[in-house]
Length: 120
Image (cartoon, rainbow, N blue to C red):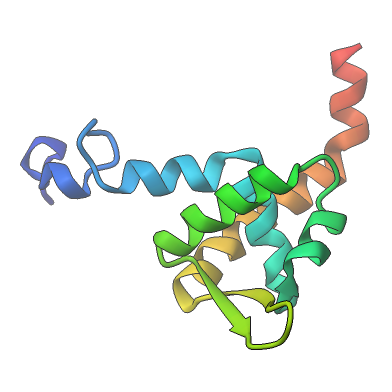
């Protein structure tokens, strides 16, 4: 078994130079997390995601989708209509990330009332 120090720093999320840190930031951001979980249901148009994820601005949704697309987690599809119709789906990589996030999402939903009680 390799020790943490023997692992390549570019693949060790504990290392500040790890390329995975960018993706970690995307996965753990509120909007990235919710977008990935929402896309588990299948393809969604931009406005559908905006309407489903309450509180996200169009600017933030656009920025987050761009980042998730750049990391290979989300695929952008443009349908050549006037105006162009744009939809988003998870890639296989994105689906593999969204599955465990959905478990966290379900846990949050199941325990929201209990958490709210403790916060009072």
